[in-house]
Length: 195
Image 1 (cartoon, rainbow, N blue to C red):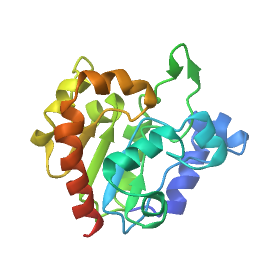
Image 2: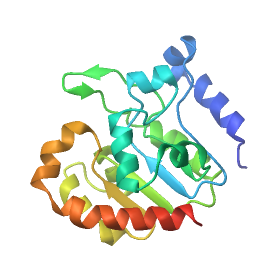
Image 3: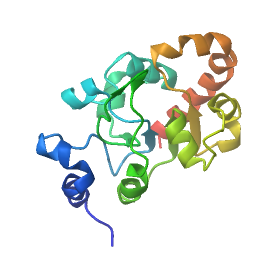
């Protein structure tokens, strides 16, 4: 039986694995819209996103919207875009950035949420965690190779590197991404937005 969104949220908050967040009054951060046609699966909210309760409201989000060819209003208010990260809570800081999303979180919570969005036509897999999980790839798979081979996953899935400004060096080393991948991404997004 399909759960309602409210039932799923309550179950996530009641899960002992999320108890430390619930005790602090922190709700899971994701966006599920039954009319959504585009799904973005990224890593996990950063600390600021969790505090502000707004995902992708930073330089990475600005770059992601630029890659997609949409503006902030379309991103947040069109009802066409859902955001379901690999973990709905900020996992904490590590030595070189945020810690990875918890391993079993997506396996536990994604399916009941995705069932509520039957109109999804395009899924953007942002970064290695989402890409390897949803494409069923080994952890040793190289994200650059996956993104370069993006056409193999069309038309439903679009694997992407993370749009973090820290990936500027990667962008310079891989000019094909801007030249080939982004134009096709914009076309796919526009098609899904109009669906």
